[in-house]
Image (tube, rainbow, N blue to C red; front, side, top):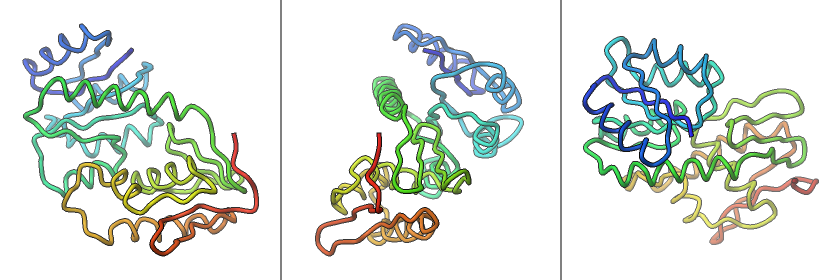
Amino acid sequence: MNLLLVEDDPMLARGIAVALSKSGYVVTIAATAGDALCMARSNSFNIGILDLGLPDRDGMDLLGDLRAAGATFPILILSARAGLNDRIRGLDTGADDYLVKPFALAELEARLRALLRRQEDDSVWRRLGRLQFDSAGKRALVDDSEVELTSRECIVLDMLLRNAGKVVSKQKLFDTVFTFESDAAPNALEVQVSRLRQKLKAAGVTIRALRGLGYRIESGNEISP
């Protein structure tokens, strides 16, 4: 299992690398954003860990560049920035998880395992009407045209497509989208669903709200695979 570790603190990077290597990971360490981008372009990684306080540029900018360059492997942000806005920005920029320093190694490994399991489950395209969605690559297509989605919108769409034709409770969807944000506003989910609904109109797909029950994604065609 190849892992890219972007961390400029040499002692911390070595400690994480040694610990993860005992769990079967092959760890490649990048101490700068430039090195990380170069490594991601020339190597195949299964997963990544990203610190935000890098010496040559901000880790958030690097994350955006990695995704723009086609890096689809799951990325976990590991940072001392504990603010809500930082976590929101990280997830919206393309991170799959966010863990605040200081951290427990056992929790880091558990989160890595969860991300890898999710990637294995997302190895196929899901289709509904004219919509195609690749959860692993975070790509949505209407016919051959790509639909720009935020990280949260991808999570909402993924959960609804996994349960196409069924009602997903509002609480379950909220907990999935805002797992690590206990202070998320009560209407935060409605905002995400509303924005996603507008983006899916061209696909002939709608997200129906059922009062007191939750949400259901619908189209004239059945989902596959």
